[in-house]
Every structure is written in C-alpha cells, then in structure tokens.
View (spheres, one colour):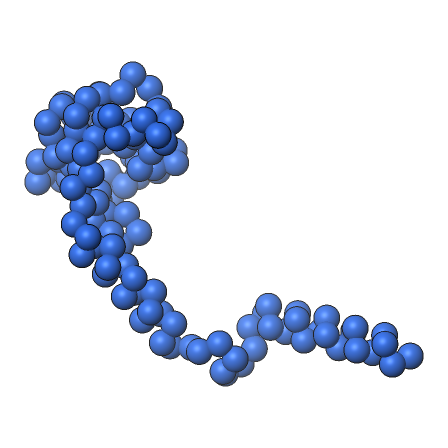
Length: 127
C-alpha cells in the first residue's frame, strides 16, 4: 500500500491529498528515510510523521483494506510517540499566550464587535 494512502486510512490526515502534500514537503519518513507519496509500506515498517509541530512515530501492524473507523485504528498501527513531544506542544501554547494577554493592547475584531453590541444594548435600554 502507498504511504499516502496508508496515512489517510489510519486517520493521520483528513484527505489523501493532504497526506501526499506532507510527503512532498518531506514531513514523512519511513525507516528513517524521507519518502515520496508513492512509496510502498509493509507491516513492521516504522513511520515518522511531522504534523502540527509534533513528531509522531508509529509502527505498522497490518495494512487496512480501506479507511477505518477511529476505534479500529489501533489494530493497524502502534503509536510509539514519546510523551515529551506532546509536552513540548503544551509549552508552545503557553509561549503564544505570553505575547499578548487578554484585555491588553489594541482591541481585536471580536473585541470591537462585543463593544459595539454592548453599546447598542445600552443605548436601547436608556430610550
């Protein structure tokens, strides 16, 4: 089975074209080597997927006949992603919050809409 089709079948990507694009950008490695979307994969291969700034690593147990339900994904692969990869993602969230605290600086578009709605409500109650 092709690597792009496999990643789509086990629900790492929503569409097969997204999986193909990830392969072309070099975000997918099989047994340590960057691969093209047409690369065939077999049971016992190890795959590394870089997605959303997390390096997922998985081992193929079996090849699915077609796209499988979320509950059946564990039959076809073993997720060996280290916990530290997810902890790094949590740290990135906190780092992004550091730059602009809520309520400081210039109002966002959503803030301005909320202010306008409040003013309209307040003006209606006074009349």
